[in-house]
Length: 229
Image (cartoon, rainbow, N blue to C red; front, side):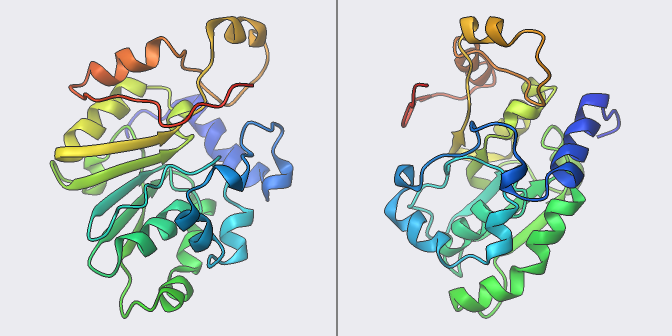
């Protein structure tokens, strides 16, 4: 992405250098109970190396259980927690790509690829962790109509150009492909209450989220689970 904004650089620094583990997070919004996870996801999470979990800053899980043989793309993959979970669910015939802009996060994931593949019993890796921006997937070789399932764990919130993100999502998905997001959405009154407070999150209001998604040709938008706070 040619034009990297000051806010984007701040997010990269925050997640790459400021945060060292989950205990450094300044909000409880990124901490969700494992009880919310699908039982299969919970079981696979127990097989993941500790560093992957300790330095992963998503919340909940956007990984659906039915991924056998699928091509999966994770936007803002961080250390690769959801990538490795999807890897196990997709099986050796599936393939999972993780994209993140933060070197420090990607380095953690790269260090654990071989050990995770060994735990899963795979003779060769079925994952690829790429450095890039979720607003410009074409520049890192993600082709048109190449992805069966796209997932993202509380990352699109951080983008300064959400319309570009959804445009790229629509481009890379195969016809009939689907997306699963874990997102924090803000009510308008909540946004007003937060006005003036520093935050790395670019808030998206609940009313506007469906408009942005459907504006790029996607249909069948639904809320799988909603937690009120």
